Every structure is written in C-alpha cells, then in structure tokens.
Length: 163
Image 1 (spheres, rainbow, N blue to C red):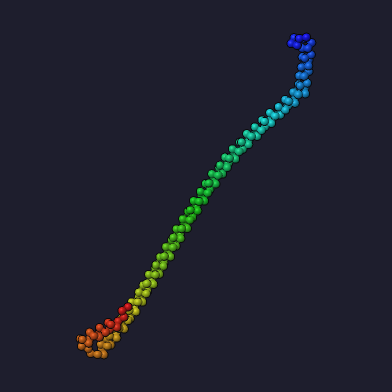
Image 2 (cartoon, helix red, strand yellow):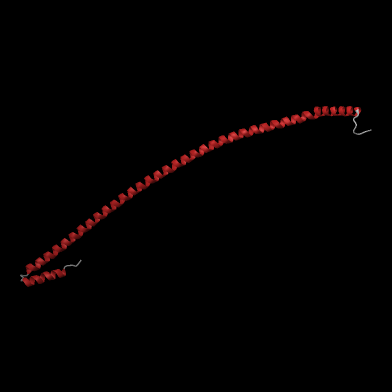
C-alpha cells in the first residue's frame, strides 16, 4: 500500500467526513460565529455613532462656551470701563471739593489778615494820636523856644515804641 497513491474508498470517506464536518460547523458554529460578528459590528457602529454624536455635542458646547467667554469678557470690559469712569468722576468731584475748600480757607485767611491789619493800624493810629495829644499837651504847658522844642520832639521820639 502506497501512502501517496490515491484510493477511491479513502477519498470517498474523507469527503463524507469533511462534508459532515462542514454541516456540523455550519449548523452549530457558523450561526453563532456570524451572529457574534454581526453583534460586534453593530456595537462598533453604535459606538462610532455615539462618539460622533458626543463629538458634535462637544463642539456645540465648546462653541457655546467660547461665546459665553466672549460675552463675559465684554461684560468685564464694560464693568471695568464703568468703574474707571466712576472713579474718574469721583476723583474730579473730590478735586473740585478740595479746590473749593482751599479757596474758602484762602478767603478766610485773607479776611483774617485784613482784620488783623485793620486792627493793628487802628491801634497804631490810636497810639500815635495819644502820643500827639501828649506832645501837644507838653508843648502847650510850656512856652518853648526852638531848642527846647527840638529836645521835646527828640524825647518824644525816643519814647516812641520801636515795634
């Protein structure tokens, strides 16, 4: 018996066994395998679909966030601008109040200086008048010649306060 030589009986039984194997494989293996592959394919397609939907939703949320951020930045700029304007107005008002206070203080100081000046002048006039009256009394009490008159004026000047 030659191992390589084809025998018709062996070929027949090998073919019958192979066909039985294919039938059993088709009947019990092919269905579950294809069902498993189809289920896996559907799951992958479903996952891809969900991923695409999630990506679209993420892009939409990203666009909304970007717009919200822009709006928030605009609002922040507006608030900053208004705060600067308010601060500037407040500063200008405070400067104006300070200028008015300084002006009032200067006017009060000028008025006080003028009153003091007038009081000092009045006091000086009164004192000069008193001195003139005293000098006149002294002159009247004595009948003086020119030398005595000069001496009297000189004495009065020496008595005059230096302040």
